[in-house]
Amino acid sequence: MHTQALRLQLPQFFLTRIDRLRFFACPTSSELLSLIVPYRRPFYLSPSLRRAQSLKTAPIFRVGVHPMQQPLLQRNMATATLDMMTLSFLSKSFEDLAIDASTDASKISSAIFPDSKYTDAEKAEIDQWVIAASHIADKTADAAKTDERLANLNRHLSTRTTLLGSKPSVADIALYQRLAPIVSKWSSEERTGEQGYHHIVRYVDFVQNSPVFGLKLENAEKVNIDVDKITFVLKPIDVKAEKARMKKEKEAAAAAAGAATPTDKANDAADRTSNKDKTDTAIGAAGTESPISKEHVDKKQKKEKKEKTPKPQKAAPVEKPLSPALIDLRVGHILKCVQHPDAEKLYVSTMAVGDAPGTENTSEYEGQVVRTVCSGLNGLIPLEEMQNRKIVAVCNLKPVTMRGVKSCAMVLAASPRDDDSHAGPVELVSPPAESKAGERVYFEGWEGEPEAVLNPKKKIWETIQPGFTTTDDLIAAFNVEDVEPLKAQGKTGISKLRTKDGFCVVKSLKGATIR
Image (tube, rainbow, N blue to C red; front, side, top):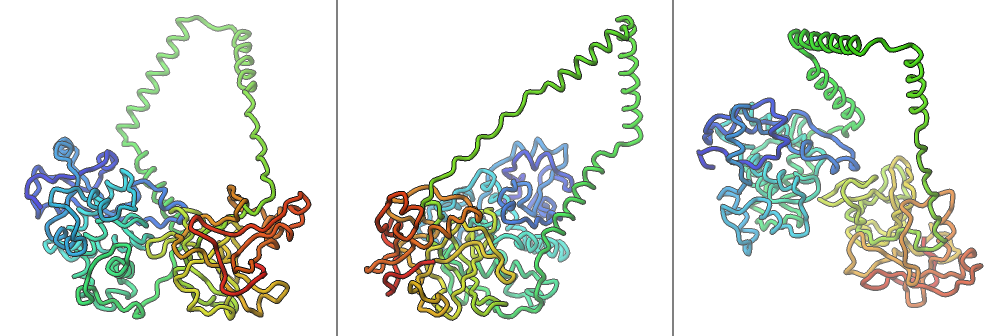
């Protein structure tokens, strides 16, 4: 870090909402500690709101300047770059990466993670985190300051998989490189005790092991983390209570901002009196208005207010014709599956189906947006066959709570027709091996846009599902003959279930029913 004036890329938002820091005329590396201060308020948001928040809610570090020094900071703005220690660390895992000390952090991020597209706000956030990472464990800071920074980082990570939420970035690697030596020295109490940094430990373990980051680390280089050794089990975050607390803080801040000094109040009163005097003088100069004309004007104004233009009525939505295309079938990737804690016949799967960050009824797991899905397959399909595998999922059924767990999709499985599906055998419908989570699955000849959510009252799924079957060559298919409303329309034939890469199949069941 240079000992000349600090060079930061800060959006105008930070320059207009600064209240805690002081910027010296020419800060040195030892003085930079006063520029990076933990943001005290954590943000626990539901998945649907989390990624919709702007940059102002994301970082836990705020940069402040003395009002007299703002021009100096603006003259010295530049994007953040990585220090030599971090660049050396990166070169071990990304040998072909052409970077140097002058390359912007956001450009390095895009080079390492080409599948992640960063908004301008996220690029600025990456810069902020790169700067923050270099100070997270500064040896020149006192212990209290370091503890405060770590506590705020821990709170930030409590609702995020990565620093940006779910997207990986070079800021995560820079922060990991700084945190790893510290976490490796922590005791069990510091890691997972009641006051421990649970979320930092989880984050470090994720960054060093996840293929998302692709770090080439020997086992000896990694922080040794025993995932089963938990000293204290944290309670789930009460989102409602946190929102209520944040609302109170906001109201208190607004009240404080609105409170005027006695001098301000006196000036306001004088202004109001002066304005009233001017108005009275103007009325006197214009002459006294007759009561009749005044009454006429008042009635006219009231009439104009009443005669508002009526709002145009919304056009009734066009009802789509009955079709298997109304059902949102996608490739699902089961990342993990466990037994339901309160139902012996149910599995609970954590599944990626291509949802965007912030989608309702989703969460984050290992850097991916996932749904929780219950399936009555316990005892029919071995648990080990439910791990890390591709399936076909129905994604637009209305979520249902099954013995205390909210299920937000359904796994398609085949069983012999007219037999008890709970007696077996049961086989999962498998998409082509090269298919990716979230890819559309459809019946040939029935392409179309699915409903966002199937209306339970219309019983679309119940009407279409009897046509789901398997062919003699073990391909999942749709038989119009088994759906009376479509058969009555004169439609015939069997359509195979497929993705863009090929057909969806079962292992051995021919002429089975799929549900």
